Image: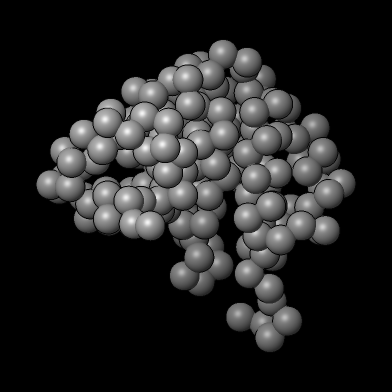
Length: 166
C-alpha cells in the first residue's frame, strides 16, 4: 500500500460507485449517477467514519422511503458485493455504511434491523451499530444477543462480545 494512503481513502469514489451498482443490481431504479455525484461533492473533506456516514445518509435519500423495503434492498445488495481485488485486509469496511444505515434509520424496526445486523456482521463488525439498540431496547437486544452467543458463525459471536463491551 502506498505510503501516503490514508485509511479514510478506502471510501473513495470507485468504492461509492461499487456500492451504488451493487444496490442497482437488486433494485433497478437506484439513481447511481445522482448518488455518486452527491457524495463526491463532500467526500474529500471527510474522515473515515464521516465518509461511511455520508454514504449511509445518501443511501437513505436514494432508497425507497419505507424502511422495510429499503432494508430488504440493502440486505439483498450484500450478496452482490465482489470483494475480489479489494484493498488488502480492508474489504469488510465496504459494509460499514450498511451497518450505519441500520443504526441511523432502523430504530423503529427492531426485528428487521436485528436480522440485517446479523447478516452484515458476518461481513463486517456491527459492534457500533448494535449499541444504539442496546440503549433503546436493552432487554430485547440482550435477550437476542444471548441467543447469538452460541451462533455457529464466529463473527456473530464476536458481535455479542464486542457490541456489549463498555
